[in-house]
Amino acid sequence: MINKRTNLMETLFHSCNLIFFLLIAFACTYPFYYILIYTISDPVKAAGGLLLLPKGLNFVNYEKLLQMNTLYSTVLISVLRTVIGTLITVACCTFFSYIVTKPELYFRKFIYRFVVITLYFNAGLIPWYLTMRYLHLDNNFLLYVLPSAISGFYIVLIKTYIEQLPAALEESAMIDGAGYWTVFQNIIVPLSMPIIATIAVFAAVGQWNAWQDNYFLVTKQSLQTLQVMLYNYLNSAAAMANVNPSDFLDKNVSHRLTPESIKMTMTMIVTLPILFVYPFMQRYFVKGIMLGAVKG
Image 1 (cartoon, one colour):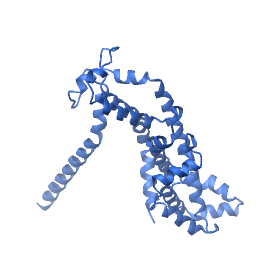
Image 2 (image 1 turned 90 degrees about the vertical axis):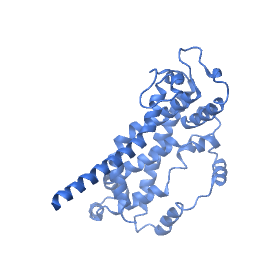
Image 3 (image 1 turned 180 degrees about the horizontal axis):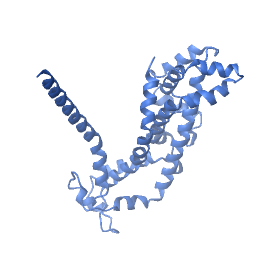
Image 4 (image 1 turned 30 degrees about the vertical axis):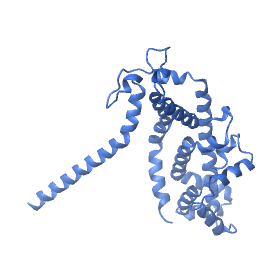
């Protein structure tokens, strides 16, 4: 009798648990699904409301946006920023973290504590803006990759991970004549791939979504990123929404574009690369963040 009651309670618990997490999963994924079906629907019909299926299936939103000449240059800059910025961030943070694990380094504790302090204090927008101007990084591609080369949060995670590696591996390599660089390149980096992949995901998502540096310090059209382009379109579309909708009718196509359809399509274009990349990196992400988070 007791076992039957226990089994019933467990079944009830697992059922409620499953329903609860399914609702959370639905709440997280439905906004992306809604944006997707909005972008592949007839803009005028979609303005009347959507629920689960697109109305008047077509790809006119994507066709019109892909015809924009500035789209390809902004995508190229965003991709270059993401790839180069991520590589620089991962390389600098990994090497810096390895260095501060060495007791032979002078002022090692002071340097590490100084890095940790940067996690709690931020100079603010105006000092950052003046510093970037002083370093002549305005209207310069290096603005996208150099200031983010070192991150205190990433260094804490990587340093913690490296300290958990068996010290005997490094000691045996040193006895065989290996130097610090050889140990770092052939032992530390291969064994730290889970946390490095995790940091790469963090850095790549941050670089892809970043827009403030471009917005405040870049006026050249050739250096504009996709996110600032999206920001400008969101603002202009919101302003256009207060004007007569007939002003936005595209008379060259059978379907009419609306400010909302433009916003939705731009949002989906910006979001798709991360949605494709993240599932492939998730297994490294979970393993790396758990191992790097143990120990303070």
